[in-house]
Length: 271
Image (cartoon, rainbow, N blue to C red; front, side, top):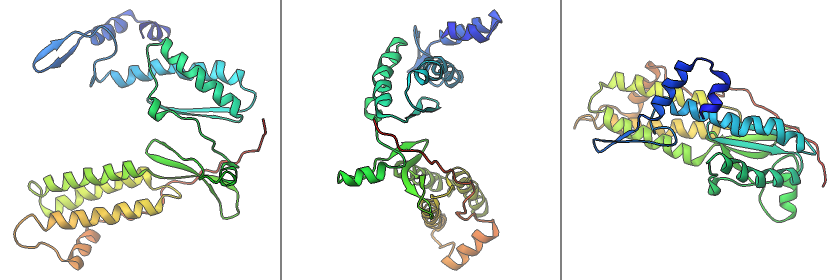
């Protein structure tokens, strides 16, 4: 890690400060434990250093070595410790999968085997899967499930919808917040903060092909909010007509598409 940082940072004082932070240790049950490797969990420096480390371990390795050894096109996308690699030929993907494990081991890392897989995905994946009597494969990346779809003109298109796991987590998190907020916030403030939370969800997930999941999220949130607002006291606060009127007063968001779609069209190649 320090060698990687020295490539871009010339000030030795900054390097010494980072070394001290890495050796600061961690506190557990009131006791400080020294750390001899890795970054302290929860440190403000940990996400930054992990991105720097993976930049040299994976990003540069893929662009400068893997791509040059591939027979076809190759693409790579990474966010934090999650990444997706796309290959034109199946043989290139198999070679990369084999070399990937060796590469990360050289830098004292390990792959999550249960989350690492090689699938067929692309323009003809749906057709080929149906010939085998199977369903086309899907994968989840950054909270979205990516699957093979088609446009209205029957062209191939990568479609995305919010993953069930992330959708369930978001609804449980909102329920927990509403349960707590009813005891400390007034009704008007609770509605405004709920609106902000829903806007934050839609700003990320309201994209093309995901409108159904977004509408379902808003539908569930409204019922969760209605339930816990009416539990602020023994007397019922809202009926459904008055509740919808209150939502309109605070400018309650709707599940409209907020980001443009992206089309991916490829060519078919055989081994």
